[in-house]
Image 1 (cartoon, rainbow, N blue to C red):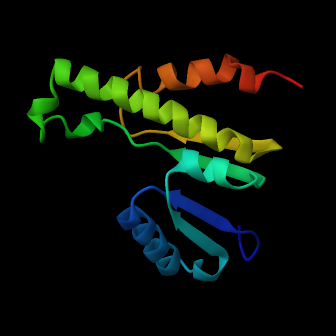
Image 2: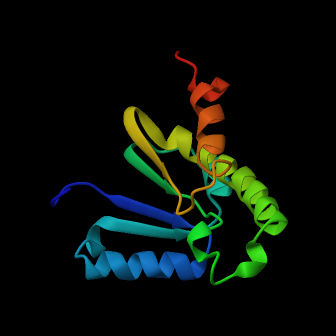
Length: 134
């Protein structure tokens, strides 16, 4: 972005918002960013949605890469957690959608490999009513 633009970061955890603010300062974009700690679905309802050229949804996920460190997630527990997270991810993605300008770009990212938390979240969004052409 160079010296142009504004970076706005939202994290529902205060710790996450502080980490984002710290990293922005470390990267030299401290004066051009705003950090908020609140739930995305609430922020989208509480004020008129702004328009952004780019939106990154870095969704909370099951983090399948940590399975070895957390064996309790194996089997049925992982499926239950993945289903719960997929529902949360859909809500976050739907809350982020109206924030993107008509010609903007929305990127959805997770750190897991489960179909339920990736294609399972994105596919209905791609063909859903909110994505229908005007």
